[in-house]
Length: 114
Length: 119
Image (cartoon, rainbow over all chains, first blue to last red):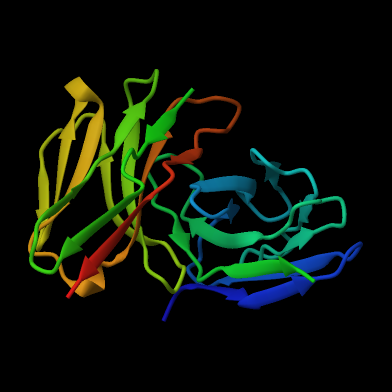
C-alpha cells in the first residue's frame, strides 16, 4: 500500500549529538514537509521541499537541516544547535505545494533527550 | 496573518452522544481552504475533509458532518452517535491560496481538541 514511513518510532539524543530522522514516501508526491508537535500544541512547520534538490525553511528551521536527493526521501537532521529537541516529529507529503492539496502524514518519530 | 482557534482543549462524552468540535479561523484572503485532521493515539494525522472558501454547503459523511459558515468564520465538526474509536485529537487547519513567494502551501493548524469517548 502507498504511504509514508517514518523511522525510527522512538529516538534518543545525547547532548551535543546530531540525529537524523528518516521519512520515505511511495505516493509519488512532489512535495514533502517536516512538522514539530509539542504537547498541547498544533503542528509547526520546520522545512518543506517542492521538488528534488530544493527545500525551504518553515517557521522554526533553526537547529534543523534537511536534504532532498530523491523524490521519495526527505530526512531531517536535528543538530546540536537545537537546544530543545524533545518533541514529536511528523513528516508529510502532498501532490504539490499548493493550498488545496491535502497533506498525508506518517506515524511520527518521538525524540527525547538522554 | 492566518490563524486557527480551537477553543475547546478537551471534550469528554459518553458513547452515543453527539459532539461538536469548534473551529474559528482568521484570514485576509477571499480564497482559502479549510481542513480537518484526526490524530489517534498512534500518532499519525488522518485527513478527514477539505473545504474551499467558495463552497459553503454543509457536508455529511456517515456519522461525521461539517458546518462551514463564512459569516462567522467557523468550520465546525460534528460527530453523531459517538463511538470509543472516535477518541483522538482533532485538528482544524487553514491554507490560503494567495501567491506569496511560493509560500502558498502554508498550512496553519489550530492547537487541537482532545476528544475522549467513554463507553
